[in-house]
Amino acid sequence: MKRRLIALLSAAALLAACASPTPADYAAEKPVLDLKTYFNGPIEAHGLFTDRSGKVVRRFTVQMTGTWTGNQGVLDERFTYSDGKTERRVWRLTDEGGGRWSGRADDVVGTATGVAAGNALNWRYTLRLPVDGSVYEVQFDDWMYLMDERVMLNKAVMSKFGIFLGEVTLAFRKP
Image (tube, rainbow, N blue to C red; front, side, top):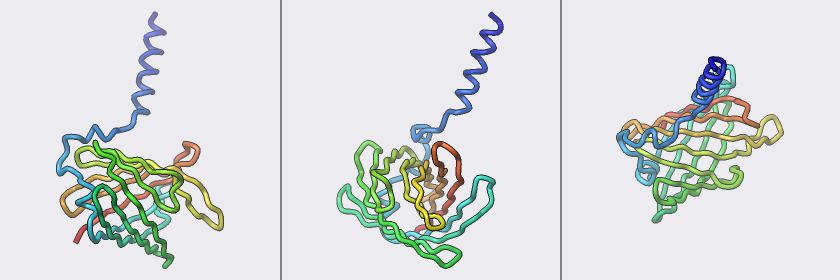
């Protein structure tokens, strides 16, 4: 009996360690994130990519412009990397209601799905990522946290086949 209890408690501890936060965990947090308000007009971001060891392997800035018509939005992102390379991604966002969001971009496989609650948004999507002449499809678990009306922080975990590849960290700032 004692062995079964220990095995059960060990299994419960292991499952609890694997639990991830959900947007509902942030429902009471303020200020409340309204994507249509925050991603409207010009926004600037500074970011970096760290590999699985935590080493910074790429730094970048992003100039963005968001526009909205009803529940449809366009977020035009222009990346400039520390090595001088540039990239553009245009998101087409849809407010599905009830805190649910969807998004598409040319380098996103299928549709990104998001859930917002309180000051947080969790995006999940697969991105076609070019690396050294090859293109890999990698999964993003992307979290955004509104700090105040001008600043939002973003942390995204990147993985492939469930294997952790690295993290992207961004700080957004509205003028």
